[in-house]
Length: 86
Image 1: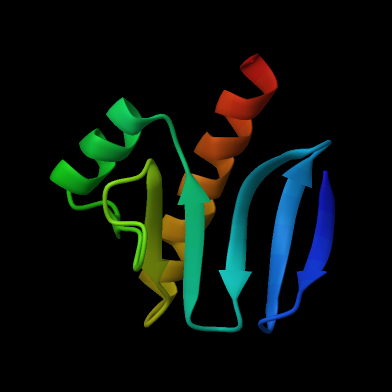
Image 2: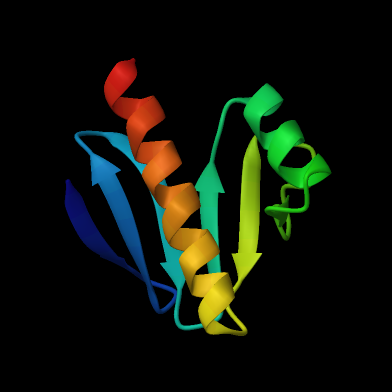
């Protein structure tokens, strides 16, 4: 897995050419999922719709507490697991 710096104070995590998520500074983690997985995550309250791409498969996790960081790590792991299966 590669971690590439982004121009907007962030880090992009990839497996080959496939992105499994990225971090915006210390504030937000954005993670792509298939739309049905994204819908389940949002419905269960585990993530919010992406902060700008509200109808996409992307979710956002605001990093306000240690619990938020743990949640973001769990979702990044899920994104990774889905990526290596395909």
